[in-house]
Image (cartoon, rainbow, N blue to C red; front, side):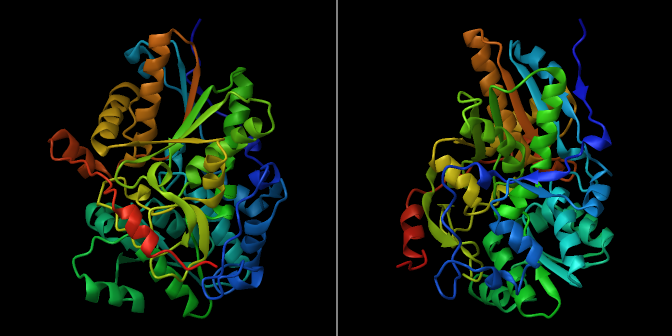
Length: 454
């Protein structure tokens, strides 16, 4: 009997509504705080940088939020994304496990990011905004927002973390091809960027710094809003098209995961792929389902961070969030998984980790590239360094199934391709790739810089 290699849903199966996990959580996260007042943020506090429909979604507890027809029409360019069976990887590992992955690398920008970029651009266009300012790490989000903004006749300004700006010039070119304006962050384009450069002209930058620059840009210019690629509730919400499609695909083939994993930087692709399944665990339909968030050992927010209120950016201009954090002043090492170098994580994800519904694991970049190499040898796809983290977890889990003789179902979200990350693969293949340990004393340093919450 032949094995079905991939499940491709019809365009009519693209979800018509996003799933909001807050409707099913036993306890929702503590609210974000206004950095100026230290009080719970009100809808009007977000108005200077976000369209009001985004603010409404951010604070909504409705289980389903309708996807506008104009957004679904754009999503049709690449959605539904395929669900693949990794049969060749299974055979290589000689595992009885069945391994499936959702392939988000089929979008024009090459990752999951346009799932929310298109929605955010649409809502800003609806309110008459002319330009969007944002940050980006490895460049997937900046690419996606440049793409989405272009489709709705908006301009996009992207502050790209210096380490990634230098490592990934083709991401910059992609953004510029879609009319995006790209600055190496910290930049001389903002007051905060100039301040950071004056203090440390050789800094490799961080997402926290880039966020500060983008927020400042939006807050100091009329008709400019801020767009964020991860962390906040509405971003996780928009990404649930991944998990909702995956559940439909599994129903079509009569299967269901025993183990789910994905990579986590801010948490959007992981949340989008897993939250529709987490709901089954919360409600008791699948109490034994295991879900693991995979992160880099050099920026281990969920595994070594503190669950506290902290600023979402380095300058302290963004909302203060309850999350696992390494401290907003933390400058992570310049690892090649640029999208996983954020000092905190999505509050919704953090709360689910805190409450025991989701686990976490951290890996070194040499071992994740070894996993990515094996995946390329078996499944063909050269995946993003970010995605390689969950492939490492998948291989470990598949080998456990082999050792225990268990025929389990493993599912992961393959969040993007690595076509612009070949310099990282070159570093791995040539033996130049190095691992970074997270210094234990940085937890103490993080405590010293946390916002003073009474």
